[in-house]
Image (cartoon, rainbow, N blue to C red; front, top):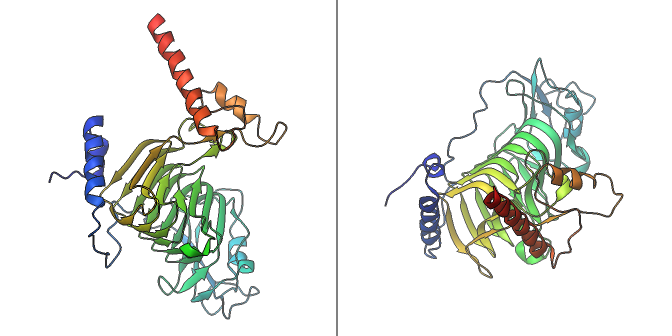
Length: 362
């Protein structure tokens, strides 16, 4: 069999790329595939480098938020207290921060409601990791907003209600060597589990992710060496429906841009193992799937839903008109769930037809 490196696949002419995708889908569908004994290798791991870091210790069992946090013996008790010691709203310039968490479980009250507006850099990032190895620290669902250069390593996240890891407006976000657990499939509580939206430069590496209806992304994501299983709607989806006003300039046309999905294992999913819901320059290569599509199909490639959410007068809804003027694909109207996709496809088709007619006249 002819094999291509993922970067080589990106350079293939469209017919060959489609053929490569077809070969992938045919080989991945084999029901006789054996369960992997370990997570697959990561293609081109994200390089953390040798950053400058100040360490803050957290001990969820015997720490105290009145301590300095400077050593394991002087550990804080809550992750929230450690997070509050990182400057907010400005780029870190003298040091980054490493929060080391000793074994134990943190209650929702012990973590920030939102990990918000902390701006690390390549040299001064923010690293949160388990001090004694993967599997020793359990966190509840975390919400991350407007944060840069945040790395989560060797942690376990657990949420029965979905969105165990939700990253919105993130720039350079790394989730590595972690376990993300949702509700059992038969519980009826399954929702999105790892959700990345309005973000760029996101890296999901060597994670064990199970108990989700979907896992969605946004722009410049690299997903490699992960295991997705016990999923409802599907394994991993690049793109999804969105309110037009929530898109980010300059990415105003597709739901997902520049996504690379390689060397992952997906199994025991009721829907498609991988999907693209409105994507541009999305590569899916060297993945393994088994026991996929028990109520649906192997792969899914569809248009992304688009609507101007809310009602006239809602904050931010005026951005729909502004984004249309900038060439975005969308509408000023709120599209209902039954007819939204057809209306959007018709809108895009009509716009493309007008452009074609203009080109012919020129």
